[in-house]
Image 1 (cartoon, rainbow, N blue to C red):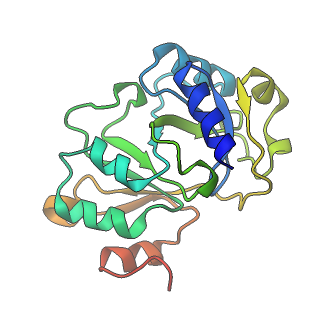
Image 2: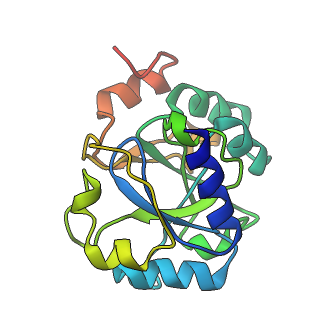
Length: 201
């Protein structure tokens, strides 16, 4: 719903934390440039402050525009994989989202039509206690997290398998890639996309 996208964007702009449904599991989102918002998100789920999180866009165009240093080979693969149930680990030489932490940048562009109008990036993590099972339904999100968030959006029942994490930091120059966490998109589908095909068989 457009109203969901507008409410989501207003909440993030105000420094709030949102519980929302991605295309895989329920997540938490906040402004990636707000130290206070990021600290609140981490505290809500009990996540260690030194653990990196991904940055999420809801449309591919602003995601690519935010990372102009990406080369053509990487951009072409992103277009074949996104939007979808993958998190791409990309080189981030300019540290564009420093509060996300980590070696490189985790980038997510989920296929969520209800939130596609959201143009700003968010820092996101799964809406569960650190180390606990991912939430497939809103009722699976711990009550303390729902109560502590500023906005809660019910997206119904989701697939329940987290995103596949793919390391593309060596892809542009050497064609190197690796699945570092199995998830919603099978490795053979990633391999097809790397070879120039589509994710779907």
